[in-house]
Image 1 (cartoon, rainbow, N blue to C red):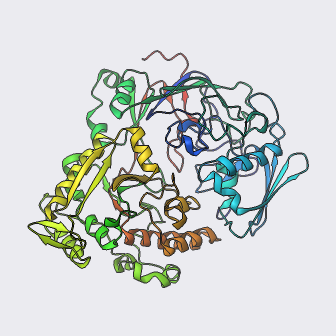
Image 2 (tube, rainbow, N blue to C red):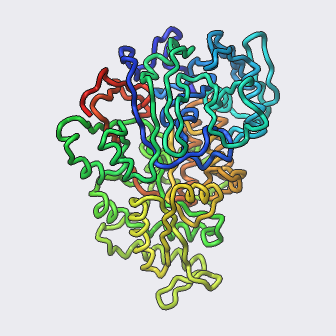
Image 3 (cartoon, rainbow, N blue to C red):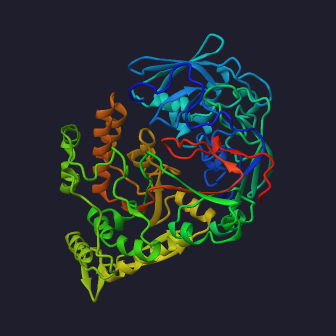
Length: 579
């Protein structure tokens, strides 16, 4: 994306893989949720969690593949996969791919330029966001010779777009996709080019993938050391408790643990004490993912930024971290926490000031001078200072307080619902509710099952949720679906707070237009300052490390990538006998 690539043209493999990893055996992963479709590319399937089918999903490109493979050891760099070579100009006005002549579908037919062109046509017509919007940035697609495809971009495209086309768009087989039924949810195993084929499906409960012995790319450098298991099973669970119990029994082989309390207290059982289950931590070099209470600004009660700022003063992180989590979390402040892209603790540079010059009225002054921090308390649970700040902000917003009740300018009590989907989220919401009640603000906690939660999320039918956003060292086009004005009412977008602000749009444009790393960093930090000032999220906390428990026959490479552990590079010892 910026600068040069890290590996030479004759590279053999990515450094975070193990070329000596044995092939064979099986692994079972767990997912909390359910599914009713194997088509992850249409809106009708958005509420499902068949995530292993996604490009760059939790478990890698198991079934569908993009034209190029992303290295997770670099911020945003691509290497050959379906495309054996690529040509692009300095202005990035076009990109031309030449397909690998060895590329084959799982039924043995060759991957052709017609397949690539068909993919863009069908996803534009029937795909879900963001796939259906990609053609808006393409002027034309041309077939070049026997194996070439050239994309020419229009003025709506940006410098990141060619990399997104190459790395996040799947290629679908024209001969095996029925355009008439493509837009519908389906449980029919697809024909695809990836290393695995679907062996068995039990709707809502389990998907089993079988490694394709004839996988065309098994000897490519970008695939060396990957896809080591003969079979991969994804088990779906209704909640975290049943998922963890399945892991304890050996039904599931690995367990990603995001709870420090659970990590420190839940592993006192025989398989752990006998060394059959091992707890590992991984340190990654990317920003921490944002986690926070999200205010839905589509609701009138959250439309005023002063109200959102007031409500953000009323979460007592210090008390919650000590009382609920044994002090094991760090406080989240930035949307790119723990990286050079974070604005927190850094005064704005001259480049940032220039980008933000027209939007100074939207910024908290302390975000510009680098002194802003999220609300802090003494941890006692009785600190009155944050409540005083919240009270003053609400008064500025036209609220009144009668008999200890916060009353809106319209004369109604300030009340709202916090929608949760797990016990841990309920604990957080209850802690927040207790502090809100100090100012006479009524919060109701509504626990929703996975299907209901996903449906309400997709339709923006909530007041407050506990939302998460993944973060990377190369944020780009995905920010449109999170923060762009056009995504506010786009069903299925990730614009959970309903942001619609020309200042945010301008910063996304600046990020995507940056031609070098310093200009890019300026744009992201300026964007971060605006997001913080807008109080769309009440930042919560993050773990400074990744926590994964595994049965001891599951192994992984010595080197951890920049983006953390990578399941597709793991393997199993032959003839495991420790379950």
